[in-house]
Length: 189
Image (cartoon, rainbow, N blue to C red):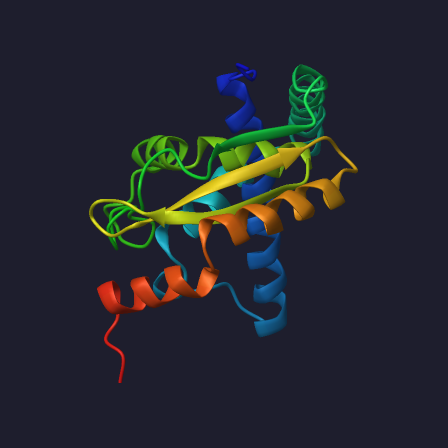
């Protein structure tokens, strides 16, 4: 299938989650009795707070309505399928620090593009609410984890869990992947 890949989909979702970030920062500021200092929040969080200052309640509700429309079109485009199988990510894991969200070098456009290239498959189901699960499927030639994602129609959580369990048993125990990752990336004392 080719699911609806409308660029506005990500923009609408971004409006929603950035507003949620701004709300969390505001709630914490109220708890502390002061605004956060610049060195207390990362660049992406500061960007979200600034971006949402220009939004109105109508802007937020319009983004929510449009996002709901995108989600309905996605669910409708997959209605004839019991299960949808995708890679978990669009590429292998990025290097630590590759997605700069913390420093003054943070660039929203670069970050958004990197994020879309990395996780185009999971984002869609996060926003539609369709049940989905990611299963470890092995390691890349560089030793990085690779996964598969199983998704289903709304309300079919049990199907996703049943198939995920069977796939995980077939592809090998999760502990094997954890052990390999521990040997490749972390020193074990």
